[in-house]
Length: 122
Image (spheres, one colour):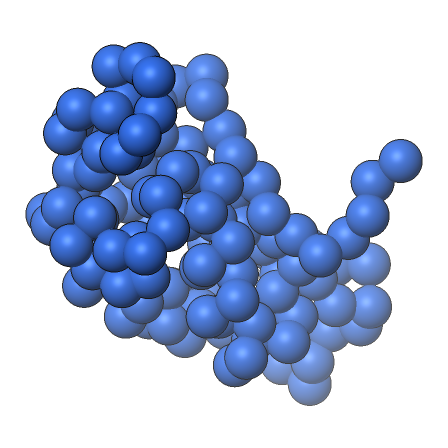
Protein backbone atom coordinates (compact mmCIF):
# COMPACT_ATOMS: atom_id res chain seq x y z
CA UNK A 1 0.00 0.00 0.00
CA UNK A 2 1.33 3.44 -0.96
CA UNK A 3 0.45 6.58 0.99
CA UNK A 4 0.98 10.28 0.34
CA UNK A 5 -0.08 13.34 2.31
CA UNK A 6 -0.54 16.95 1.29
CA UNK A 7 -0.67 19.79 3.81
CA UNK A 8 -2.00 23.34 3.74
CA UNK A 9 -2.86 26.07 6.25
CA UNK A 10 -5.67 28.52 6.78
CA UNK A 11 -6.04 31.31 9.31
CA UNK A 12 -9.58 31.93 10.45
CA UNK A 13 -11.83 32.81 13.35
CA UNK A 14 -14.67 30.81 14.81
CA UNK A 15 -16.76 30.37 17.92
CA UNK A 16 -18.53 27.37 19.38
CA UNK A 17 -21.91 28.89 20.14
CA UNK A 18 -23.57 27.34 23.17
CA UNK A 19 -20.35 25.71 24.38
CA UNK A 20 -19.61 26.23 28.07
CA UNK A 21 -16.06 27.54 27.91
CA UNK A 22 -13.68 30.04 26.34
CA UNK A 23 -14.25 28.65 22.85
CA UNK A 24 -17.79 30.06 22.91
CA UNK A 25 -16.23 33.47 22.23
CA UNK A 26 -14.87 34.41 18.82
CA UNK A 27 -11.20 33.45 18.57
CA UNK A 28 -8.75 32.49 15.85
CA UNK A 29 -6.49 29.64 14.82
CA UNK A 30 -3.88 28.91 12.23
CA UNK A 31 -5.37 25.58 11.17
CA UNK A 32 -2.99 23.04 9.67
CA UNK A 33 -4.78 20.59 7.40
CA UNK A 34 -3.43 17.37 5.93
CA UNK A 35 -5.13 15.02 3.52
CA UNK A 36 -3.95 11.43 3.12
CA UNK A 37 -4.35 9.36 -0.05
CA UNK A 38 -3.65 5.65 -0.50
CA UNK A 39 -3.40 3.27 -3.43
CA UNK A 40 -2.67 -0.40 -3.65
CA UNK A 41 -0.47 0.16 -6.69
CA UNK A 42 1.11 3.17 -8.36
CA UNK A 43 -0.24 4.74 -11.53
CA UNK A 44 1.60 4.62 -14.86
CA UNK A 45 3.80 7.54 -13.72
CA UNK A 46 4.84 5.77 -10.51
CA UNK A 47 2.67 7.96 -8.28
CA UNK A 48 -0.31 7.65 -5.95
CA UNK A 49 -1.38 11.03 -7.33
CA UNK A 50 0.23 14.21 -8.61
CA UNK A 51 1.18 16.32 -5.56
CA UNK A 52 0.66 19.54 -7.53
CA UNK A 53 -2.88 18.56 -8.53
CA UNK A 54 -3.81 17.42 -5.02
CA UNK A 55 -2.45 20.64 -3.48
CA UNK A 56 -4.45 22.65 -6.03
CA UNK A 57 -7.68 20.86 -5.13
CA UNK A 58 -7.11 21.28 -1.40
CA UNK A 59 -6.24 24.97 -1.79
CA UNK A 60 -9.31 25.47 -4.00
CA UNK A 61 -11.54 24.15 -1.23
CA UNK A 62 -9.80 25.99 1.61
CA UNK A 63 -9.38 29.44 0.11
CA UNK A 64 -12.99 30.48 0.77
CA UNK A 65 -12.37 29.91 4.52
CA UNK A 66 -8.97 31.61 4.79
CA UNK A 67 -9.05 34.83 6.85
CA UNK A 68 -12.79 34.52 7.44
CA UNK A 69 -15.09 33.79 10.37
CA UNK A 70 -16.06 30.15 9.81
CA UNK A 71 -19.42 30.67 11.52
CA UNK A 72 -20.46 32.91 8.60
CA UNK A 73 -19.71 30.38 5.84
CA UNK A 74 -21.71 27.24 4.95
CA UNK A 75 -21.80 24.61 6.27
CA UNK A 76 -20.47 26.14 9.49
CA UNK A 77 -23.32 28.61 9.66
CA UNK A 78 -25.45 25.53 10.54
CA UNK A 79 -22.97 23.23 12.34
CA UNK A 80 -20.31 24.13 14.87
CA UNK A 81 -16.89 24.70 13.27
CA UNK A 82 -15.00 22.26 15.48
CA UNK A 83 -11.82 20.67 14.18
CA UNK A 84 -13.75 17.39 13.93
CA UNK A 85 -16.51 18.94 11.79
CA UNK A 86 -13.96 20.75 9.63
CA UNK A 87 -12.12 17.47 8.98
CA UNK A 88 -15.38 15.69 8.11
CA UNK A 89 -16.45 18.49 5.76
CA UNK A 90 -13.12 18.51 3.91
CA UNK A 91 -13.20 14.73 3.58
CA UNK A 92 -16.71 14.65 2.14
CA UNK A 93 -16.03 17.50 -0.28
CA UNK A 94 -12.77 16.07 -1.63
CA UNK A 95 -13.71 12.38 -1.64
CA UNK A 96 -16.00 13.01 -4.63
CA UNK A 97 -13.06 13.86 -6.89
CA UNK A 98 -10.30 12.02 -4.99
CA UNK A 99 -11.37 8.41 -4.51
CA UNK A 100 -7.92 7.58 -3.06
CA UNK A 101 -8.59 9.93 -0.11
CA UNK A 102 -8.61 7.99 3.17
CA UNK A 103 -8.09 10.55 5.91
CA UNK A 104 -8.20 14.26 6.76
CA UNK A 105 -6.32 15.73 9.73
CA UNK A 106 -7.00 19.16 11.21
CA UNK A 107 -4.82 20.76 13.86
CA UNK A 108 -5.87 24.05 15.41
CA UNK A 109 -2.73 24.28 17.56
CA UNK A 110 0.33 22.23 18.38
CA UNK A 111 -0.70 19.18 20.36
CA UNK A 112 -4.35 19.18 19.23
CA UNK A 113 -5.34 17.04 16.25
CA UNK A 114 -8.69 15.88 14.89
CA UNK A 115 -8.86 13.14 12.26
CA UNK A 116 -11.73 12.02 10.05
CA UNK A 117 -11.83 8.87 7.95
CA UNK A 118 -14.43 6.33 7.00
CA UNK A 119 -12.28 3.48 8.30
CA UNK A 120 -13.39 1.80 11.49
CA UNK A 121 -10.91 1.48 14.30
CA UNK A 122 -11.14 -1.18 17.02
